[in-house]
Amino acid sequence: MKRLVLLGIALGLAATSGTAQTKLDISLPWGPTEFHTINAQNFAKRVAEATKGQVVMTVHAGGSLGIKANESIRALEDNTVAMAEFAGFQNVGEIPLLGIESLPFLVDDYDQLRVMHGFARPSWEASLAKRGNKVLYVVPWPSQNFFVKKPVRSIDDLKGVRMRTYDRVTAEMVSKIGMVPQQMNNPDIVPALASGRLDAVMTSGTTAVSQKYWEFLKHTYNTNHLWASNMMVIGAGTWNKLSAEHRGAIERLAKEMEPEFWKVSQGEHATRMAELRKNGMTVEPASPELLARMRAVTRPMWDDFAKNVGAEGAKILADYRAKTGKQ
Image (cartoon, rainbow, N blue to C red; front, side, top):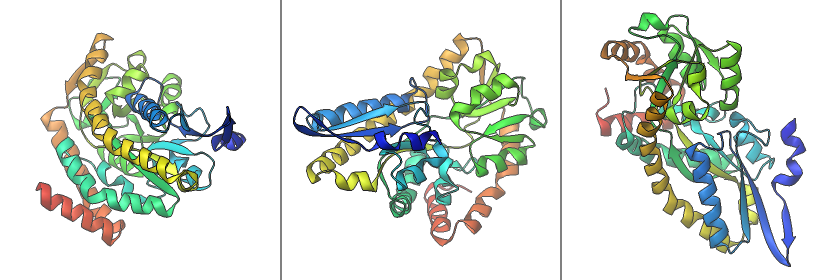
């Protein structure tokens, strides 16, 4: 596998001008212009400044290290790469609780997402730590959309449409709606659109602009059907080799910059929707009737999740619903 070829460079320690310098490669599946990638680059820059050039993080966008997003936890666990960023939903096969924020229509906005993270993040971090993954910061994607070829007025217009999905949860969601799920990672979307394998994509406006969906799809509907957050993670083996001073500096920066990154996320949706319109796509909210039907057919997934994820996950879901009044 391509990623194994890169094993030797991923965790290298180099001597530069007589000063010990730790070089850490970061694997990202997102394209070079997406805001999560730019956030990671800004974080790396600040780390280099804070450590006086002794810790150098290099961002490798677009899956260029050969590590797929859903392989990230294992890649960090076995020291194939020093650091990686991935969305929680992409690794529910490893840790099912990472999919809780992606349950259809469970989270309405950033305020509710913060409530969700308050309940779920300690468990996320503990579960990842058991797999040799240390979380540095967590940042959400903006509001989600359906990008399709033809106008959608009712749920019947989605029947048989081949929709890109993220994971088992979103695959189940689109199946309940009547669509045909096509699970794939970010870098695989454009080739699938170009080949005709896909008819539609669910994602944020950020990815839609980055991948120029207007070349394949015509209509954008803001469905806000789920939320997804990215985690910047460092392997425990790599982390433990850093000095206490450098670990402290990196943790302080992560805590300081995370709220800034959330603000970037919150500003993304309107900006990217404007760009889609500029490039010829129609952009409109999903109709109330469509949303009502989508909510109705997917609502049982909340109860199924609570039954299948274990007592800890069920309590997190119950506490979140009690706090937000979600019925």
